Amino acid sequence: MGDTYNVRDESFIKSDAMPNGASTTKAGTALDLGNALTARGVRVAECELLFTMPALTATMAPDTRTMTYSIESSATSTFDSATTLWSLQKAGAGSAGIAADTFRMKIPSNCDRYIRAKAVSGASTTDASAVSMKLELLF
Figure 1 (tube, rainbow, N blue to C red):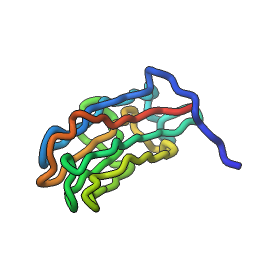
Figure 2 (cartoon, rainbow, N blue to C red):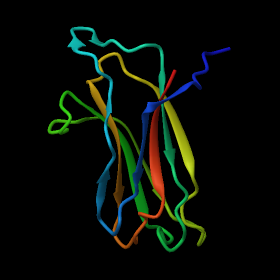
Figure 3 (cartoon, helix red, strand yellow):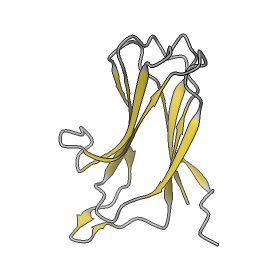
């Protein structure tokens, strides 16, 4: 049986509204791991990232229209040279929009100090800012 991380610390939960129109990028609020990068990466307690993607209605994401999600890390809080740790594109289908989903991952050993979620809406999507994506660090 593998480790299960479910303890939450409010200071490591970031919730951000989704993009507000077609072809729009919404970068989430960064989690600051607070540790200096060493030759072996950031030293972080045993933990996981939990990314929650909200349900998008058929109005927000009509059939075949997409939302691309990613998790990025950066040595600086400005994310000038971000590294993509994970990415997934979801598409509206069956006149039902896009279903809610979650993704869990361990933090890579070479991860930079700051981590954030990002959502990029595809062409012909509409305002999805009424719902939020959430990135959490679980211990």
